[in-house]
Amino acid sequence: MKEIQCCVNSYEKQLDAAYWEAQYKTKATGWDLGKVSPPIQTYIDPIENKNIAILIPGCGNSYEAEYLLEHDFTNITVIDIAPTPVAVLKEKFKNNPNIQIILGDFFEHQGKYDLIIEQTFFCALPPAMRQKYVWKMHQLLADEGKLAGLLFNRKFEVSPPFGGSKEEYEVLFAVAFDFLKMDVCLNSIAPRANSELFFELRKKHS
Image 1 (cartoon, rainbow, N blue to C red):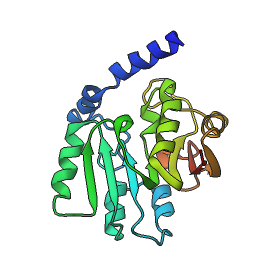
Image 2 (image 1 turned 60 degrees about the vertical axis):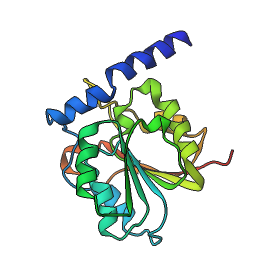
Image 3 (image 1 turned 90 degrees about the vertical axis):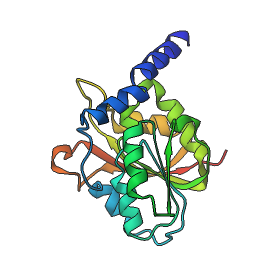
Image 4 (image 1 turned 180 degrees about the horizontal axis):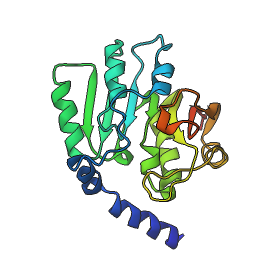
């Protein structure tokens, strides 16, 4: 247990706010698509209730949030640990009352959400932190709340991003969520073709 905790603490120090801020400052943001991810856009489009509470953690430039706002969603919260993207978003949406933009640590965030959108946040966390991620998501979701988005279905020689497999994720999430969907994406952007899983999970009752 001490070894695992030491590993988590070591990674947290390496991948802290200063690390991610440096990535944005130097524009070393290879994960940034410059637009909403097609699988997430496809997921958002049929949602009829525009007033559900939505959280996007590790939001970065948050094209997903922008897309939600353009489609009349009214209750969006985004959070990131890096000051630069948060400052950009606050300026960009300074006159929009439908979005709350938070600079802070996701794992210290409090709230209740109907939907949490996963887009390049999970893969930024070291695998030793994944169980912590699962239970924090469970805590933040309202009853019947859903966690949906993208996970990498591959390994990487250099990390982050940290990858994995469908089998690993099924074991990881099964303790706290019911599976509605976890399949290989058919509409990923070309560089990520056949390497992404789209998933939709529903919070299990405690």
